[in-house]
Length: 119
Image (cartoon, rainbow, N blue to C red; front, side, top):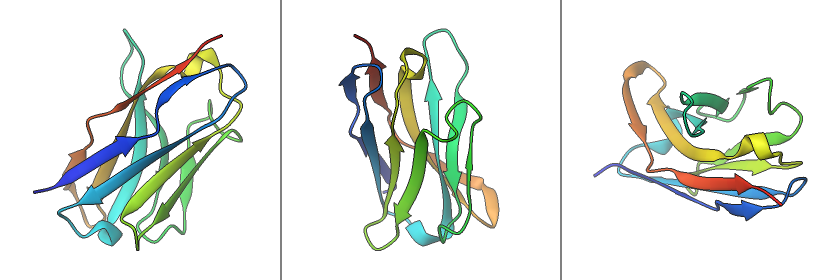
């Protein structure tokens, strides 16, 4: 069955870094646009970053531009989110999302990983 498994979350001080990973299985990873979303308590889920199926294009929320980097390794069926210069407002549950590039109706979500930025 389809699985997206996130890892790498945790507690970090402001200004610190974390790298999230999302490993996919049960589907053809290289045909999916991959994205990271986040949801803070009391807020709606928001797009953080996305990357096309071949990694040729990326996009970022304005709030993370210049601090976060999304990348993928199709040989490992894994997408990453490198997060630098973390701020308390980055605290949220981070979710991995996969969307089939030619049919957006086919999409999957991971279970989420908690990121807490606090001193």
